[in-house]
Image (cartoon, rainbow, N blue to C red):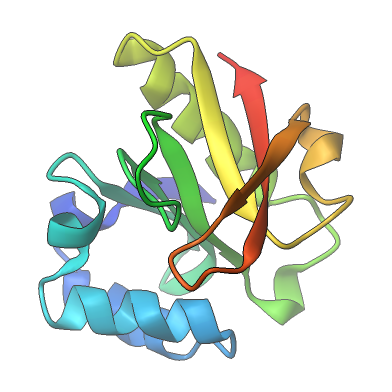
Length: 149
């Protein structure tokens, strides 16, 4: 398995098609943002889509970005759109992408990294701590996790 950056990939069409196979609503949004070249407008120019691949198969993906679905906050950077395809779940593969995103945050000079989610019990096993709740763009409550990098 290897980690690739979508925007630096020579196989963007392949990876876009693979992201499009995702059965998760937010994954479908990511697909549309990428297809319409809008992701960086929404999440920041330095946004990366991190892909965990095995040959031509997409195992997991996430974003590393200045902004996520929490408006009007100075917190950054964010890990978002975290997804592992069902056939690869249970092996903690997403941990590889989280660790990679954390290293990008450290390289960029950040001391913390954040995740906005409705999930409970997933990110704690990767060292993230609940630091509070914030309203997302749709007005719903989102759990905010952070980790020192």
